[in-house]
Amino acid sequence: MTALADLTVAIEPGVVGLVGVNGAGKSTLIKLALGLLAPTGGKIRVLGLDPIAEGEAVRGRVGYMPEHDCLPPDVIAAEFVTHMARVSGLPAAMARERASETLRHVGLYEERYRRIGGYSTGMKQRVKLAQALVHDPELLLLDEPTNGLDPEGRRAGGPCSTWSTGSAPSSASRSWCARTCSARSSGSARRWSRSTPAGCCARRRCRR
Image 1 (cartoon, rainbow, N blue to C red):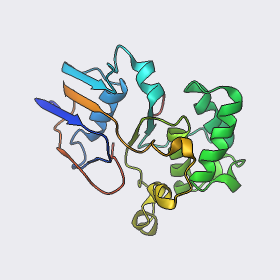
Image 2 (cartoon, rainbow, N blue to C red):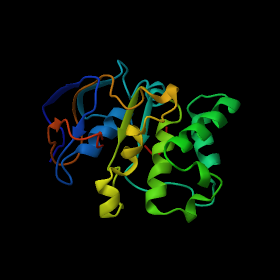
Image 3 (tube, rainbow, N blue to C red):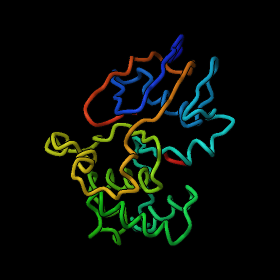
């Protein structure tokens, strides 16, 4: 069967949640938007760009928090987030500064020199959020951001709870709003569930 068949959708600036059962095609849509999957038919545009033909440009303007844990356990958080900022095109000095600011924003500043492998699940979620935010993206995609959190952490909003603290670096203040993602495509899973506004998270990167 096919995911996202006969889908035409335009997502305007703002916060949008993709809601659906497991296998509905939420992550497939995200991978299409990032250029990690090519549509078998139709086309998709993200920020006016073709994710397949212009994937590097798209991923330089998009932040992605993946569903699964793909963090290097022997690397300290500050080094990892700095590296991801460098991969996104920031100069070395700016990358280090942004990494520190972003880790402070997600509540890991005091723990930034610890190896990621020693972090709790909730702390790893925050590292994933930090690497998605560090280059000040125009579009932020979060795939299951509360996965692995205990009930209290889920009620608190998980990593998303940091957004409402008012302590975000000014250069990151616009990172959490979807700009424009228009899609007309078909992929390869089972089916798609229409996106609807839901809470503070867009549900839907391990590489840029």
